[in-house]
Image 1 (cartoon, one colour):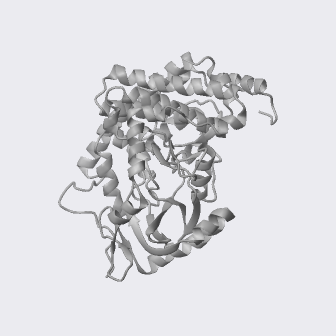
Image 2: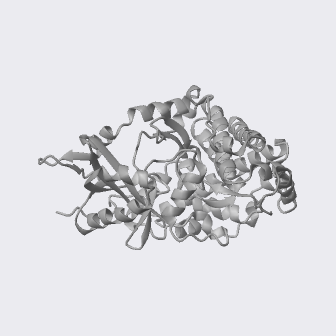
Length: 451
């Protein structure tokens, strides 16, 4: 596609991509053509992680098919990579699912609701994000006591919302789309709950939760193993040292804000499901006194799970990939978002828990699932329109009805496949191939506390 093409030419280009991957082809997973072992695909994704922490990840993945889905993005990436796709590229969230939607504080202090996890972000076909989010809606619906008909309906409503928003964006001024804010959020139960959680979540609460006074006027990280603990000595020194490179990567006006804080202590924190095993440090800073704490998360980033199936997807710095991908998708991002390196590894740096709120699966009971699906479609479409070509995507999808049904059918089939893979995973845990924490009386050999 040549640069500076008109909107009509871009739409025609998108329509022509149907010859490469028909809309009907988007409906099928083609399970008989799967030529890889899903458990081996998952095992390969663990390269570079802390081995002692992996039992915690497996224990979290055991909880349900949806929890397994959250921790096994590498399996879905392998599936999507073997199927025909449109070739219309956007900045993928990469791990689009309902619990990676949440609320947080924007730079101006207002609370916003958006996609909020970008460890797997990469440029890739738009439909990969849509298929993953749609499958997550079906799995989350099943976990929150919805029947199959309701889950199927919610997946279709999500697809229709995405396609309808994308059609609207293709006709709107480009800069207006880039700044677009999603309204009606406060009237949707699961989102209301997340926003209320954000309002209640303050840095001082996190200070009390993660740290304790040491008797000399300073706060130190508590030993809350296996979830979090204090880091000392050379390891802590390396974390502090890595922040010099992070500071250089900040815009000048944000660098000045960062310089007003002074470092206090370093901890290690286990977060999420898919992220367990990655090195995740937390730096405590103090601003205008002890009542002004600020936490920075220094989170290890490895190659996106999709890099294996996207030829030429090479990034020199995985933390920078995650930070720049987040900025491409979100209209507003963390004021202190950046990246650094340490010990030959790459890290994303961001504020930890800056008024963050998440989706509670139990809040999806009743009409919560369908209403959240509508917002998820609009949010994902906005991110893709900001980073891709809405006109080309609409040209490919057409009026939307056929494409929405194809995406719905894929989501339901993939949810069934995930439940089957989950059964294989449970068997692998039972046989000892994957050792889950709590499987026996032996606890994971976590790093020892230095005295």
